[in-house]
Image 1 (cartoon, rainbow, N blue to C red):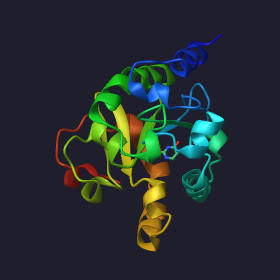
Image 2 (cartoon, helix red, strand yellow):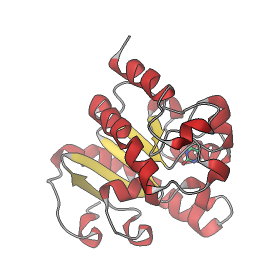
Image 3 (cartoon, rainbow, N blue to C red):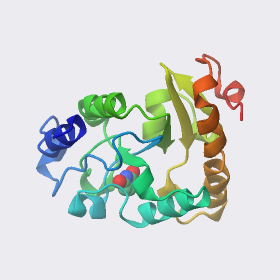
Length: 198
Ligand code: URA
């Protein structure tokens, strides 16, 4: 068994926070073991909890459309979430739940070593761009602790807002250029306005 498969198995039986009591399934993540890109969403919703797979509901459908814009299929990227179990009624994750789950995400990034992490929404963004507003940070990239990261809005936020849909489509188109230059980008310590170099 690979270390990633092992990790997925451990996540599936995790009891580090109370969300384990309400779940049907934990949703560890899925994708290749050495992906160029890793997408990190917020947490499983109803369909993900049922199927133990990330982004399989309406937001997932739109994510697949976005990937298609840059010629990618979801099987080519790794997809996971900040929290691995559904929060009741799809409420926002609590700080203690994010904290309890953070070790799993750290280990996933460590094992997968993606060239680029793409954050979807403010919860995954906050892990890399602390205390910044997603309206300012979306569409920008930076290198944090050696990891290239690009911030996008969450696809679910755009399901009923054409303006955000267009923004997500414009942002996803930046990914190929960021990926191509990821190795040459120096570590950055500036604000997001200065970070978008592509
Ligand atoms: N929204 C998320 O953030 N993650 C999923 O897996 C599905 C919907």
